[in-house]
Image (tube, rainbow over all chains, first blue to last red; front, side):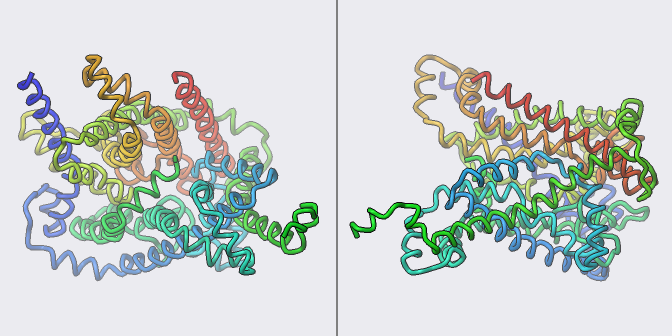
Length: 277
Length: 303
Protein backbone atom coordinates (compact mmCIF):
# COMPACT_ATOMS: atom_id res chain seq x y z
CA UNK A 1 0.00 0.00 0.00
CA UNK A 2 2.73 2.44 0.98
CA UNK A 3 4.80 1.50 -2.05
CA UNK A 4 1.75 2.03 -4.22
CA UNK A 5 1.33 5.52 -2.81
CA UNK A 6 4.96 6.36 -3.45
CA UNK A 7 4.61 5.16 -7.02
CA UNK A 8 1.56 7.32 -7.50
CA UNK A 9 3.38 10.32 -6.15
CA UNK A 10 6.34 9.63 -8.39
CA UNK A 11 4.17 9.49 -11.51
CA UNK A 12 2.34 12.62 -10.49
CA UNK A 13 5.52 14.65 -10.14
CA UNK A 14 6.99 13.02 -13.22
CA UNK A 15 3.97 14.06 -15.30
CA UNK A 16 3.93 17.59 -13.89
CA UNK A 17 7.65 18.12 -14.34
CA UNK A 18 7.73 16.80 -17.91
CA UNK A 19 4.71 18.84 -18.98
CA UNK A 20 6.03 21.93 -17.18
CA UNK A 21 9.27 21.65 -19.10
CA UNK A 22 7.30 21.39 -22.34
CA UNK A 23 5.12 24.38 -21.44
CA UNK A 24 8.08 26.47 -20.36
CA UNK A 25 10.41 25.56 -23.20
CA UNK A 26 9.17 28.18 -25.72
CA UNK A 27 9.74 30.90 -23.10
CA UNK A 28 13.24 29.62 -22.42
CA UNK A 29 13.96 29.54 -26.14
CA UNK A 30 12.65 33.11 -26.51
CA UNK A 31 14.76 34.46 -23.65
CA UNK A 32 17.91 32.69 -24.84
CA UNK A 33 17.32 33.74 -28.42
CA UNK A 34 17.35 37.45 -27.67
CA UNK A 35 21.05 37.04 -26.85
CA UNK A 36 21.86 35.06 -29.98
CA UNK A 37 22.60 35.89 -33.60
CA UNK A 38 20.02 35.05 -36.27
CA UNK A 39 22.03 32.07 -37.54
CA UNK A 40 22.18 30.55 -34.07
CA UNK A 41 18.46 31.01 -33.56
CA UNK A 42 17.64 29.09 -36.72
CA UNK A 43 20.05 26.40 -35.61
CA UNK A 44 18.17 26.21 -32.32
CA UNK A 45 21.01 27.22 -30.03
CA UNK A 46 19.93 26.75 -26.40
CA UNK A 47 22.76 28.59 -24.66
CA UNK A 48 22.97 32.34 -24.06
CA UNK A 49 25.05 34.21 -26.62
CA UNK A 50 26.67 37.59 -26.92
CA UNK A 51 24.39 39.32 -29.40
CA UNK A 52 21.97 40.94 -26.98
CA UNK A 53 23.19 44.52 -27.49
CA UNK A 54 23.25 44.07 -31.24
CA UNK A 55 19.69 42.73 -31.32
CA UNK A 56 18.60 45.45 -28.93
CA UNK A 57 20.07 48.16 -31.13
CA UNK A 58 18.44 46.72 -34.26
CA UNK A 59 15.14 46.68 -32.43
CA UNK A 60 15.41 50.33 -31.42
CA UNK A 61 16.41 51.29 -34.95
CA UNK A 62 13.33 49.60 -36.41
CA UNK A 63 11.24 52.78 -36.35
CA UNK A 64 8.08 51.01 -37.48
CA UNK A 65 8.32 48.91 -34.33
CA UNK A 66 8.95 51.74 -31.86
CA UNK A 67 6.13 53.64 -33.51
CA UNK A 68 3.82 50.63 -33.15
CA UNK A 69 4.52 50.36 -29.43
CA UNK A 70 3.29 53.94 -29.13
CA UNK A 71 0.19 53.17 -31.23
CA UNK A 72 -0.62 50.03 -29.28
CA UNK A 73 -0.20 51.85 -25.97
CA UNK A 74 -2.60 54.61 -26.99
CA UNK A 75 -5.11 52.14 -28.41
CA UNK A 76 -4.99 49.73 -25.48
CA UNK A 77 -5.24 52.37 -22.77
CA UNK A 78 -8.02 54.38 -24.39
CA UNK A 79 -9.93 51.25 -25.36
CA UNK A 80 -9.67 49.97 -21.79
CA UNK A 81 -10.94 53.17 -20.17
CA UNK A 82 -13.65 53.85 -22.74
CA UNK A 83 -15.05 50.35 -22.82
CA UNK A 84 -15.07 49.68 -19.08
CA UNK A 85 -16.71 53.07 -18.49
CA UNK A 86 -19.41 52.68 -21.14
CA UNK A 87 -20.10 49.00 -20.46
CA UNK A 88 -20.28 49.52 -16.70
CA UNK A 89 -22.93 52.22 -17.25
CA UNK A 90 -25.09 49.45 -18.66
CA UNK A 91 -24.16 47.06 -15.86
CA UNK A 92 -25.38 49.66 -13.38
CA UNK A 93 -28.47 50.62 -15.35
CA UNK A 94 -29.61 47.03 -15.86
CA UNK A 95 -29.09 45.86 -12.31
CA UNK A 96 -29.91 48.91 -10.15
CA UNK A 97 -33.07 50.01 -11.98
CA UNK A 98 -34.59 46.77 -13.17
CA UNK A 99 -37.51 46.78 -15.54
CA UNK A 100 -39.05 44.38 -17.98
CA UNK A 101 -38.11 46.48 -20.98
CA UNK A 102 -34.50 46.50 -19.90
CA UNK A 103 -34.47 42.72 -19.54
CA UNK A 104 -35.51 42.39 -23.18
CA UNK A 105 -32.69 44.69 -24.26
CA UNK A 106 -30.24 42.84 -22.04
CA UNK A 107 -31.09 39.50 -23.60
CA UNK A 108 -30.68 40.94 -27.08
CA UNK A 109 -27.26 42.31 -26.10
CA UNK A 110 -26.22 38.88 -24.84
CA UNK A 111 -27.13 37.40 -28.22
CA UNK A 112 -24.35 39.45 -29.81
CA UNK A 113 -21.83 37.27 -27.97
CA UNK A 114 -22.73 34.53 -30.43
CA UNK A 115 -21.71 36.65 -33.42
CA UNK A 116 -18.23 35.58 -34.51
CA UNK A 117 -15.93 38.46 -35.36
CA UNK A 118 -14.97 36.82 -38.62
CA UNK A 119 -18.54 37.35 -39.76
CA UNK A 120 -18.36 41.06 -38.94
CA UNK A 121 -15.08 41.70 -40.71
CA UNK A 122 -16.53 42.54 -44.14
CA UNK A 123 -19.58 44.63 -43.13
CA UNK A 124 -17.60 46.44 -40.42
CA UNK A 125 -14.94 47.33 -42.95
CA UNK A 126 -17.63 48.74 -45.23
CA UNK A 127 -19.27 50.57 -42.33
CA UNK A 128 -15.96 52.21 -41.48
CA UNK A 129 -15.61 53.11 -45.13
CA UNK A 130 -18.81 55.09 -44.72
CA UNK A 131 -17.60 56.57 -41.43
CA UNK A 132 -14.38 57.63 -43.19
CA UNK A 133 -16.48 59.69 -45.58
CA UNK A 134 -18.30 61.44 -42.74
CA UNK A 135 -15.50 61.82 -40.20
CA UNK A 136 -12.08 60.82 -41.55
CA UNK A 137 -10.57 60.82 -38.06
CA UNK A 138 -12.75 57.91 -36.95
CA UNK A 139 -12.70 55.75 -40.05
CA UNK A 140 -10.38 53.43 -41.93
CA UNK A 141 -6.67 53.64 -41.13
CA UNK A 142 -7.17 55.54 -37.86
CA UNK A 143 -6.36 54.50 -34.32
CA UNK A 144 -9.87 55.43 -33.29
CA UNK A 145 -11.29 53.08 -35.88
CA UNK A 146 -9.44 50.23 -34.14
CA UNK A 147 -11.10 51.11 -30.83
CA UNK A 148 -14.68 51.95 -31.87
CA UNK A 149 -16.14 48.43 -32.32
CA UNK A 150 -14.99 47.56 -28.80
CA UNK A 151 -16.21 50.57 -26.79
CA UNK A 152 -19.17 48.51 -25.68
CA UNK A 153 -19.12 44.74 -25.70
CA UNK A 154 -21.70 42.22 -24.57
CA UNK A 155 -19.05 40.45 -22.53
CA UNK A 156 -18.25 43.54 -20.45
CA UNK A 157 -21.91 44.49 -20.02
CA UNK A 158 -22.58 40.96 -18.80
CA UNK A 159 -19.51 40.98 -16.58
CA UNK A 160 -20.48 44.26 -14.91
CA UNK A 161 -24.08 43.25 -14.45
CA UNK A 162 -23.09 39.95 -12.83
CA UNK A 163 -20.77 41.74 -10.42
CA UNK A 164 -23.29 44.48 -9.66
CA UNK A 165 -25.50 41.80 -8.12
CA UNK A 166 -23.04 41.81 -5.21
CA UNK A 167 -23.09 45.61 -4.97
CA UNK A 168 -24.53 46.86 -1.63
CA UNK A 169 -27.48 48.95 -2.78
CA UNK A 170 -27.90 50.61 0.65
CA UNK A 171 -24.97 52.78 -0.33
CA UNK A 172 -27.10 54.27 -3.09
CA UNK A 173 -29.91 55.06 -0.66
CA UNK A 174 -27.48 57.07 1.44
CA UNK A 175 -26.30 58.88 -1.68
CA UNK A 176 -29.85 59.68 -2.71
CA UNK A 177 -30.49 61.21 0.72
CA UNK A 178 -27.50 63.44 0.09
CA UNK A 179 -29.18 64.59 -3.10
CA UNK A 180 -26.81 62.98 -5.57
CA UNK A 181 -28.11 62.59 -9.11
CA UNK A 182 -28.00 59.20 -10.79
CA UNK A 183 -24.78 60.13 -12.57
CA UNK A 184 -23.38 61.36 -9.26
CA UNK A 185 -24.27 58.06 -7.61
CA UNK A 186 -22.55 56.21 -10.43
CA UNK A 187 -19.39 58.30 -10.37
CA UNK A 188 -19.03 58.91 -6.63
CA UNK A 189 -20.40 55.71 -5.12
CA UNK A 190 -20.64 52.92 -7.68
CA UNK A 191 -17.22 53.26 -9.32
CA UNK A 192 -15.20 53.55 -6.07
CA UNK A 193 -17.06 50.61 -4.52
CA UNK A 194 -16.61 48.43 -7.58
CA UNK A 195 -12.87 49.07 -7.86
CA UNK A 196 -11.90 45.40 -7.99
CA UNK A 197 -14.46 44.67 -10.70
CA UNK A 198 -13.09 47.57 -12.72
CA UNK A 199 -9.56 46.29 -12.20
CA UNK A 200 -10.48 42.81 -13.39
CA UNK A 201 -12.43 44.06 -16.40
CA UNK A 202 -9.67 46.54 -17.20
CA UNK A 203 -6.98 43.87 -17.24
CA UNK A 204 -8.92 41.54 -19.49
CA UNK A 205 -9.74 44.41 -21.85
CA UNK A 206 -6.19 45.73 -21.93
CA UNK A 207 -4.75 42.30 -22.73
CA UNK A 208 -7.29 41.78 -25.49
CA UNK A 209 -6.56 45.19 -26.99
CA UNK A 210 -2.78 44.84 -26.75
CA UNK A 211 -2.83 41.46 -28.49
CA UNK A 212 -5.64 42.10 -30.98
CA UNK A 213 -4.62 41.21 -34.51
CA UNK A 214 -7.44 40.63 -37.00
CA UNK A 215 -9.38 43.90 -36.75
CA UNK A 216 -6.29 46.16 -36.75
CA UNK A 217 -5.03 44.14 -39.73
CA UNK A 218 -8.27 44.83 -41.57
CA UNK A 219 -8.65 48.51 -40.76
CA UNK A 220 -5.09 49.84 -40.54
CA UNK A 221 -3.37 50.40 -43.87
CA UNK A 222 -0.37 52.66 -43.48
CA UNK A 223 2.57 51.16 -41.60
CA UNK A 224 2.93 54.25 -39.40
CA UNK A 225 -0.44 53.35 -37.83
CA UNK A 226 0.38 49.67 -37.28
CA UNK A 227 0.00 48.08 -33.86
CA UNK A 228 2.60 45.78 -32.30
CA UNK A 229 1.10 42.46 -33.47
CA UNK A 230 0.92 43.75 -37.06
CA UNK A 231 4.58 44.82 -37.04
CA UNK A 232 5.79 41.64 -35.38
CA UNK A 233 3.83 39.59 -37.87
CA UNK A 234 5.34 41.55 -40.74
CA UNK A 235 8.87 41.33 -39.29
CA UNK A 236 8.56 37.61 -38.67
CA UNK A 237 7.20 36.48 -42.00
CA UNK A 238 9.15 38.43 -44.61
CA UNK A 239 11.61 36.86 -47.02
CA UNK A 240 14.72 37.97 -45.17
CA UNK A 241 14.02 37.60 -41.49
CA UNK A 242 16.29 38.98 -38.82
CA UNK A 243 15.36 36.39 -36.21
CA UNK A 244 17.30 38.12 -33.47
CA UNK A 245 15.32 41.33 -33.72
CA UNK A 246 12.02 39.48 -34.12
CA UNK A 247 12.69 37.55 -30.93
CA UNK A 248 13.74 40.61 -28.98
CA UNK A 249 10.68 42.51 -30.24
CA UNK A 250 8.45 39.65 -29.11
CA UNK A 251 10.24 39.57 -25.77
CA UNK A 252 9.84 43.27 -25.01
CA UNK A 253 6.27 43.54 -26.22
CA UNK A 254 5.25 40.60 -24.03
CA UNK A 255 6.67 42.31 -20.94
CA UNK A 256 3.66 44.63 -20.36
CA UNK A 257 1.24 41.70 -20.26
CA UNK A 258 3.66 39.67 -18.13
CA UNK A 259 3.93 42.51 -15.61
CA UNK A 260 0.16 42.85 -15.48
CA UNK A 261 -0.13 39.13 -14.90
CA UNK A 262 2.46 38.87 -12.15
CA UNK A 263 1.51 42.07 -10.32
CA UNK A 264 -2.26 41.80 -10.62
CA UNK A 265 -2.65 38.02 -10.72
CA UNK A 266 -5.62 38.02 -8.36
CA UNK A 267 -7.60 40.58 -10.37
CA UNK A 268 -6.58 38.84 -13.56
CA UNK A 269 -8.04 35.52 -12.48
CA UNK A 270 -11.12 37.31 -11.12
CA UNK A 271 -11.59 38.93 -14.50
CA UNK A 272 -11.49 35.60 -16.27
CA UNK A 273 -13.50 33.50 -13.89
CA UNK A 274 -15.85 36.20 -12.58
CA UNK A 275 -17.94 36.00 -15.69
CA UNK A 276 -19.20 32.48 -15.03
CA UNK A 277 -20.13 32.92 -11.40
CA UNK B 1 -43.11 59.93 8.26
CA UNK B 2 -46.28 57.88 8.55
CA UNK B 3 -48.27 60.29 6.40
CA UNK B 4 -45.88 59.63 3.52
CA UNK B 5 -46.77 55.97 3.55
CA UNK B 6 -50.37 56.81 2.79
CA UNK B 7 -49.43 58.57 -0.41
CA UNK B 8 -49.80 56.14 -3.35
CA UNK B 9 -46.51 54.95 -4.75
CA UNK B 10 -47.14 56.30 -8.23
CA UNK B 11 -47.42 59.85 -6.97
CA UNK B 12 -44.43 59.51 -4.70
CA UNK B 13 -42.38 58.80 -7.79
CA UNK B 14 -42.24 62.51 -8.46
CA UNK B 15 -40.08 64.43 -10.82
CA UNK B 16 -36.89 63.40 -9.06
CA UNK B 17 -37.63 59.72 -9.28
CA UNK B 18 -38.68 60.04 -12.88
CA UNK B 19 -35.40 61.70 -13.67
CA UNK B 20 -33.60 58.78 -12.11
CA UNK B 21 -35.50 56.30 -14.26
CA UNK B 22 -34.76 58.34 -17.38
CA UNK B 23 -31.08 58.48 -16.42
CA UNK B 24 -30.98 54.73 -15.86
CA UNK B 25 -32.41 54.24 -19.33
CA UNK B 26 -29.75 56.55 -20.74
CA UNK B 27 -27.11 54.43 -19.01
CA UNK B 28 -28.47 51.37 -20.77
CA UNK B 29 -29.18 52.95 -24.14
CA UNK B 30 -25.71 54.38 -24.79
CA UNK B 31 -23.87 51.03 -24.71
CA UNK B 32 -26.77 49.39 -26.53
CA UNK B 33 -26.49 51.83 -29.42
CA UNK B 34 -22.83 50.91 -29.86
CA UNK B 35 -23.60 47.19 -29.79
CA UNK B 36 -26.41 47.58 -32.31
CA UNK B 37 -24.22 49.73 -34.55
CA UNK B 38 -21.13 47.53 -34.46
CA UNK B 39 -22.63 44.04 -34.09
CA UNK B 40 -26.26 43.76 -35.14
CA UNK B 41 -26.31 46.27 -37.95
CA UNK B 42 -23.21 44.76 -39.65
CA UNK B 43 -24.67 41.30 -39.16
CA UNK B 44 -27.86 42.28 -40.99
CA UNK B 45 -25.89 44.14 -43.59
CA UNK B 46 -23.70 41.07 -44.12
CA UNK B 47 -26.78 39.11 -45.07
CA UNK B 48 -27.79 41.80 -47.54
CA UNK B 49 -24.28 41.88 -49.02
CA UNK B 50 -24.28 38.07 -49.25
CA UNK B 51 -27.13 38.30 -51.74
CA UNK B 52 -24.92 40.33 -54.07
CA UNK B 53 -21.95 39.63 -56.27
CA UNK B 54 -19.25 41.68 -57.92
CA UNK B 55 -15.72 42.92 -57.34
CA UNK B 56 -15.09 45.62 -54.75
CA UNK B 57 -18.00 47.99 -54.23
CA UNK B 58 -19.83 47.35 -57.52
CA UNK B 59 -22.42 44.93 -56.25
CA UNK B 60 -25.22 43.31 -58.24
CA UNK B 61 -28.10 41.42 -56.74
CA UNK B 62 -27.87 37.66 -57.29
CA UNK B 63 -30.19 36.20 -54.68
CA UNK B 64 -28.95 32.99 -53.12
CA UNK B 65 -26.29 32.28 -55.74
CA UNK B 66 -23.45 32.85 -53.29
CA UNK B 67 -24.88 30.26 -50.93
CA UNK B 68 -25.27 27.77 -53.77
CA UNK B 69 -21.67 28.41 -54.78
CA UNK B 70 -20.48 27.36 -51.28
CA UNK B 71 -21.36 23.73 -51.95
CA UNK B 72 -19.13 23.50 -55.02
CA UNK B 73 -16.26 25.62 -53.75
CA UNK B 74 -13.31 23.31 -53.05
CA UNK B 75 -11.43 26.03 -51.15
CA UNK B 76 -14.43 26.61 -48.87
CA UNK B 77 -14.88 22.89 -48.23
CA UNK B 78 -11.18 22.60 -47.48
CA UNK B 79 -11.27 25.54 -45.03
CA UNK B 80 -14.36 24.11 -43.36
CA UNK B 81 -12.80 20.64 -43.09
CA UNK B 82 -9.63 22.12 -41.58
CA UNK B 83 -11.60 24.14 -39.06
CA UNK B 84 -13.53 21.05 -38.01
CA UNK B 85 -10.39 18.92 -37.77
CA UNK B 86 -8.96 21.46 -35.33
CA UNK B 87 -12.25 21.56 -33.48
CA UNK B 88 -12.66 17.79 -33.12
CA UNK B 89 -9.12 16.95 -32.07
CA UNK B 90 -7.89 20.03 -30.29
CA UNK B 91 -10.77 20.89 -27.96
CA UNK B 92 -11.17 17.46 -26.29
CA UNK B 93 -7.38 17.12 -26.00
CA UNK B 94 -7.10 20.52 -24.35
CA UNK B 95 -10.05 20.05 -22.01
CA UNK B 96 -8.80 16.65 -20.82
CA UNK B 97 -5.30 18.03 -20.27
CA UNK B 98 -6.67 21.06 -18.42
CA UNK B 99 -8.84 18.82 -16.24
CA UNK B 100 -5.85 16.63 -15.42
CA UNK B 101 -3.76 19.63 -14.42
CA UNK B 102 -6.53 21.11 -12.33
CA UNK B 103 -7.15 17.87 -10.45
CA UNK B 104 -3.43 17.33 -9.81
CA UNK B 105 -2.85 20.94 -8.79
CA UNK B 106 -5.86 20.92 -6.51
CA UNK B 107 -4.27 18.32 -4.24
CA UNK B 108 -3.43 19.65 -0.83
CA UNK B 109 -0.32 17.55 -0.40
CA UNK B 110 1.28 18.62 -3.67
CA UNK B 111 4.42 20.72 -3.37
CA UNK B 112 5.41 23.63 -5.63
CA UNK B 113 1.78 23.97 -6.75
CA UNK B 114 2.20 27.69 -7.43
CA UNK B 115 5.15 27.13 -9.74
CA UNK B 116 3.44 24.42 -11.77
CA UNK B 117 0.27 26.47 -12.04
CA UNK B 118 2.12 29.59 -13.16
CA UNK B 119 4.11 27.69 -15.79
CA UNK B 120 1.04 26.02 -17.29
CA UNK B 121 -0.88 29.30 -17.29
CA UNK B 122 1.94 31.51 -18.60
CA UNK B 123 1.25 30.84 -22.32
CA UNK B 124 -2.13 32.55 -21.88
CA UNK B 125 -0.47 35.96 -21.47
CA UNK B 126 1.31 35.79 -24.83
CA UNK B 127 -0.08 37.42 -27.93
CA UNK B 128 -1.30 34.97 -30.56
CA UNK B 129 0.94 36.48 -33.20
CA UNK B 130 4.03 36.36 -30.97
CA UNK B 131 3.68 32.76 -29.88
CA UNK B 132 2.81 31.63 -33.41
CA UNK B 133 6.10 33.05 -34.67
CA UNK B 134 8.11 31.51 -31.83
CA UNK B 135 6.51 28.16 -32.63
CA UNK B 136 7.34 28.59 -36.29
CA UNK B 137 11.03 28.89 -35.44
CA UNK B 138 10.88 26.09 -32.86
CA UNK B 139 9.35 23.73 -35.39
CA UNK B 140 11.44 24.74 -38.42
CA UNK B 141 12.86 21.85 -40.45
CA UNK B 142 16.26 22.20 -38.84
CA UNK B 143 14.76 23.74 -35.72
CA UNK B 144 15.29 22.76 -32.14
CA UNK B 145 12.24 20.51 -31.80
CA UNK B 146 13.36 18.29 -34.65
CA UNK B 147 16.88 18.26 -33.23
CA UNK B 148 15.62 17.15 -29.85
CA UNK B 149 13.34 14.48 -31.32
CA UNK B 150 16.26 13.15 -33.34
CA UNK B 151 18.59 13.32 -30.37
CA UNK B 152 16.30 11.13 -28.26
CA UNK B 153 15.89 8.81 -31.27
CA UNK B 154 12.16 9.32 -31.65
CA UNK B 155 12.61 10.09 -35.34
CA UNK B 156 15.37 9.40 -37.88
CA UNK B 157 14.93 12.39 -40.14
CA UNK B 158 13.43 15.80 -39.46
CA UNK B 159 9.63 16.09 -39.58
CA UNK B 160 8.55 18.68 -42.12
CA UNK B 161 6.18 20.42 -39.71
CA UNK B 162 5.48 23.28 -42.06
CA UNK B 163 5.78 21.39 -45.33
CA UNK B 164 3.62 18.33 -44.75
CA UNK B 165 -0.18 18.78 -44.61
CA UNK B 166 -0.65 16.23 -41.83
CA UNK B 167 2.15 17.54 -39.61
CA UNK B 168 1.18 21.16 -40.25
CA UNK B 169 -2.25 20.39 -38.81
CA UNK B 170 -0.68 18.57 -35.88
CA UNK B 171 1.52 21.61 -35.29
CA UNK B 172 -1.49 23.94 -35.19
CA UNK B 173 -3.17 21.63 -32.68
CA UNK B 174 -0.02 21.48 -30.53
CA UNK B 175 0.29 25.26 -30.64
CA UNK B 176 -3.31 26.02 -29.67
CA UNK B 177 -3.19 23.43 -26.92
CA UNK B 178 -0.05 25.03 -25.52
CA UNK B 179 -1.62 28.48 -25.59
CA UNK B 180 -5.04 27.68 -24.07
CA UNK B 181 -4.70 24.68 -21.70
CA UNK B 182 -3.61 26.79 -18.73
CA UNK B 183 -6.31 29.33 -19.46
CA UNK B 184 -9.01 26.66 -19.22
CA UNK B 185 -7.31 25.05 -16.24
CA UNK B 186 -7.90 28.23 -14.20
CA UNK B 187 -11.66 27.88 -14.69
CA UNK B 188 -11.60 24.27 -13.51
CA UNK B 189 -9.32 25.06 -10.57
CA UNK B 190 -11.61 27.77 -9.31
CA UNK B 191 -14.63 25.48 -9.72
CA UNK B 192 -12.85 22.66 -7.88
CA UNK B 193 -12.27 24.94 -4.94
CA UNK B 194 -16.03 25.04 -4.46
CA UNK B 195 -16.32 21.25 -4.38
CA UNK B 196 -16.74 19.90 -0.87
CA UNK B 197 -13.70 17.68 -0.10
CA UNK B 198 -16.02 15.53 2.00
CA UNK B 199 -17.46 14.05 -1.17
CA UNK B 200 -14.06 12.64 -2.13
CA UNK B 201 -13.57 11.46 1.42
CA UNK B 202 -16.84 9.53 1.24
CA UNK B 203 -15.99 8.08 -2.16
CA UNK B 204 -12.64 6.87 -0.89
CA UNK B 205 -14.38 5.18 2.03
CA UNK B 206 -16.58 3.39 -0.49
CA UNK B 207 -13.44 2.17 -2.21
CA UNK B 208 -13.48 4.38 -5.31
CA UNK B 209 -10.03 4.76 -6.87
CA UNK B 210 -8.63 7.95 -8.35
CA UNK B 211 -9.90 7.21 -11.86
CA UNK B 212 -13.40 6.42 -10.62
CA UNK B 213 -13.39 9.58 -8.50
CA UNK B 214 -12.37 11.59 -11.53
CA UNK B 215 -15.20 10.29 -13.73
CA UNK B 216 -17.89 9.90 -11.06
CA UNK B 217 -17.29 13.07 -9.03
CA UNK B 218 -14.98 15.58 -10.63
CA UNK B 219 -16.45 15.60 -14.13
CA UNK B 220 -20.13 15.72 -13.01
CA UNK B 221 -19.34 18.48 -10.51
CA UNK B 222 -17.51 20.52 -13.12
CA UNK B 223 -20.06 19.91 -15.88
CA UNK B 224 -21.33 23.53 -16.03
CA UNK B 225 -17.78 24.89 -16.25
CA UNK B 226 -16.76 22.27 -18.81
CA UNK B 227 -19.82 23.27 -20.82
CA UNK B 228 -18.85 26.93 -20.59
CA UNK B 229 -15.24 26.33 -21.63
CA UNK B 230 -16.19 23.99 -24.46
CA UNK B 231 -18.63 26.53 -25.91
CA UNK B 232 -16.14 29.41 -25.68
CA UNK B 233 -13.40 27.19 -27.15
CA UNK B 234 -15.69 26.13 -29.98
CA UNK B 235 -16.56 29.73 -30.82
CA UNK B 236 -12.85 30.57 -30.62
CA UNK B 237 -11.74 27.72 -32.86
CA UNK B 238 -14.44 28.45 -35.44
CA UNK B 239 -12.84 31.89 -35.73
CA UNK B 240 -9.26 30.65 -35.73
CA UNK B 241 -7.16 33.15 -37.65
CA UNK B 242 -3.96 34.41 -35.98
CA UNK B 243 -2.25 31.02 -35.75
CA UNK B 244 -2.70 29.71 -39.30
CA UNK B 245 -1.87 33.19 -40.55
CA UNK B 246 1.42 33.50 -38.67
CA UNK B 247 2.46 29.93 -37.95
CA UNK B 248 1.76 28.05 -41.15
CA UNK B 249 0.50 30.80 -43.45
CA UNK B 250 -2.47 28.54 -44.12
CA UNK B 251 -0.19 26.10 -45.90
CA UNK B 252 1.20 23.89 -47.17
CA UNK B 253 -1.25 24.33 -50.01
CA UNK B 254 -4.42 25.12 -48.14
CA UNK B 255 -3.89 22.38 -45.55
CA UNK B 256 -4.34 24.68 -42.55
CA UNK B 257 -6.44 27.49 -44.01
CA UNK B 258 -9.39 28.21 -41.73
CA UNK B 259 -12.79 29.74 -42.46
CA UNK B 260 -11.79 33.11 -40.99
CA UNK B 261 -8.67 33.15 -43.06
CA UNK B 262 -10.63 32.27 -46.17
CA UNK B 263 -13.02 35.16 -45.51
CA UNK B 264 -10.04 37.46 -45.02
CA UNK B 265 -8.45 36.27 -48.26
CA UNK B 266 -11.69 36.65 -50.20
CA UNK B 267 -12.14 40.20 -48.92
CA UNK B 268 -8.65 41.63 -48.76
CA UNK B 269 -6.11 39.36 -50.46
CA UNK B 270 -7.74 38.18 -53.69
CA UNK B 271 -9.87 40.42 -55.90
CA UNK B 272 -12.30 41.62 -53.24
CA UNK B 273 -15.54 39.67 -53.39
CA UNK B 274 -17.46 40.99 -50.42
CA UNK B 275 -20.71 39.27 -51.37
CA UNK B 276 -19.25 35.80 -51.40
CA UNK B 277 -17.11 36.51 -48.31
CA UNK B 278 -20.28 37.51 -46.46
CA UNK B 279 -21.94 34.24 -47.49
CA UNK B 280 -18.95 32.30 -46.12
CA UNK B 281 -19.12 34.29 -42.91
CA UNK B 282 -22.76 33.33 -42.46
CA UNK B 283 -21.69 29.70 -42.52
CA UNK B 284 -19.62 30.40 -39.39
CA UNK B 285 -22.65 31.97 -37.71
CA UNK B 286 -24.70 28.88 -38.51
CA UNK B 287 -21.97 26.58 -37.16
CA UNK B 288 -21.65 28.61 -33.96
CA UNK B 289 -25.38 28.40 -33.33
CA UNK B 290 -25.69 24.68 -34.17
CA UNK B 291 -22.67 23.64 -32.11
CA UNK B 292 -23.64 25.79 -29.13
CA UNK B 293 -27.12 24.32 -29.09
CA UNK B 294 -25.75 20.76 -29.33
CA UNK B 295 -23.24 21.33 -26.56
CA UNK B 296 -25.87 22.93 -24.41
CA UNK B 297 -28.18 19.96 -24.88
CA UNK B 298 -25.45 17.42 -24.19
CA UNK B 299 -24.16 19.39 -21.22
CA UNK B 300 -27.59 19.59 -19.64
CA UNK B 301 -29.14 16.21 -20.38
CA UNK B 302 -26.61 14.09 -18.61
CA UNK B 303 -27.08 15.91 -15.38
